[in-house]
Length: 171
Image (tube, rainbow, N blue to C red; front, top):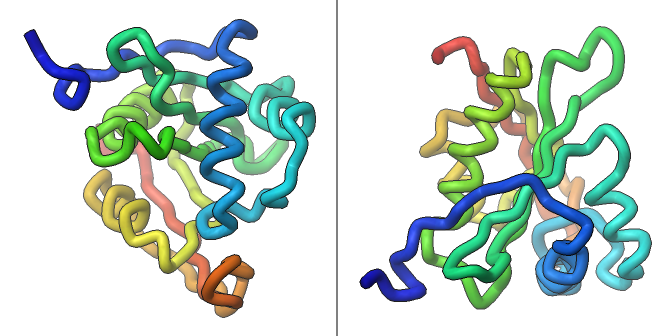
């Protein structure tokens, strides 16, 4: 029987009953002020209104019956830019280094293709978040732009951010 550390996460659409688990993850990730531009003091209501907004597809990764991660998928821009997706990923601190981010990333790529998106763009990947940068590169994303000092890291001050892009035309 696999241990908690080796069980393959199951990805499913988020339900209203997942709100508390999503908030737990969102708050833990954003409070550090080192990976997301959200206000570290964002309220539960604001966070959930953003993560589960109309037009945003929210998913959760369950491992051994517990929500261990969450991601969202949406159009990066409206109208004539709506063929390019945007996504954001968060893994509970206690569930990191178990491959959950990779499984969610792979699921997201398949889901974006299924929904008809032609590419995915991440608008602000913090350069010091090496785990994310390396994961996205392994999943075929390229750094297509560097935004000097675009992120105000809570500990390091102003650091660069990357725009990362991946075509979905490769199957």
